Length: 100
Image (cartoon, rainbow, N blue to C red; front, side):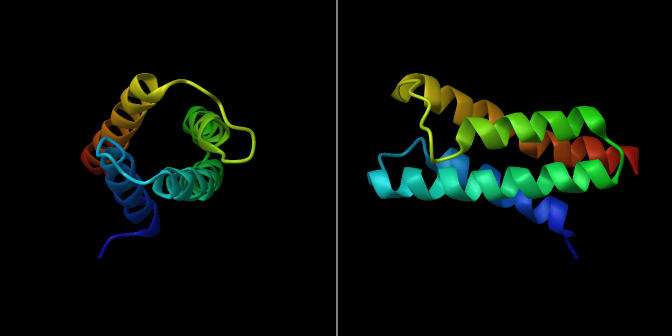
């Protein structure tokens, strides 16, 4: 069974990669809110496990994706960020699996 950490990473990756499609604006707002919560939870899990660098990365991602003060990067750059973060989350699943 998948643990919560893996489930959040898979869900966020899926949502972020769907941002490449032409979705209604409400979807992007939804993704930003879910990403804020998901990255905050991942940061907390990293803190509990003593992974300080990973925790800082997740905090930075939570700040980047937070929906309250929007960071205007433009569609092309946001698409690039979504792809890099989505693939990075998937890669981190395999990296953690190989370490255990």
